Length: 109
Image 1 (tube, one colour):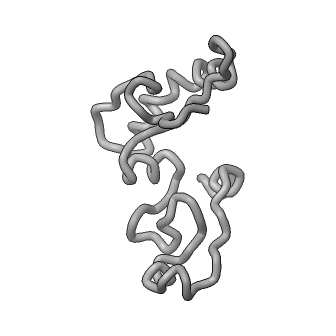
Image 2 (cartoon, helix red, strand yellow):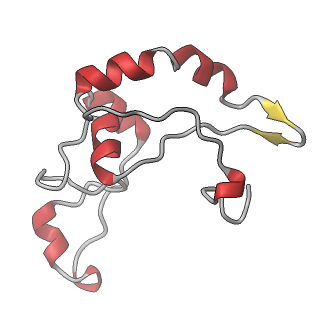
C-alpha cells in the first residue's frame, strides 16, 4: 500500500479509450486485455503485489460496473443508498448497505 495509490508516480496507464462508453465499445476495447489483467493481478513486483483496477470518471465507472448512473435509484458507487435518501443529512438517516463486487457481478447482465 502507498499513501497516494492514484498519484502519477504510483500509476501506470494501461490503455486510452477514445470512443463512447457504450457496452458494445467497452466489450470490444477491453476484451483484448482481460487475460493480461488476470495474469497481472497479484503478480509480485519488488516487495509488492500488483493491483490492477479501473480509473475514470463517474460515467465510465458506472458503465464498467453496469450501474445506471446518476439518475438511477442506487446511484452511489460505494453503497446501496437510494437517491431519494441522499437528500437527508447523513446524521439523520440509517446507514446504507455497502456495495460489493459480488453484488455487482450478480446483478450485471
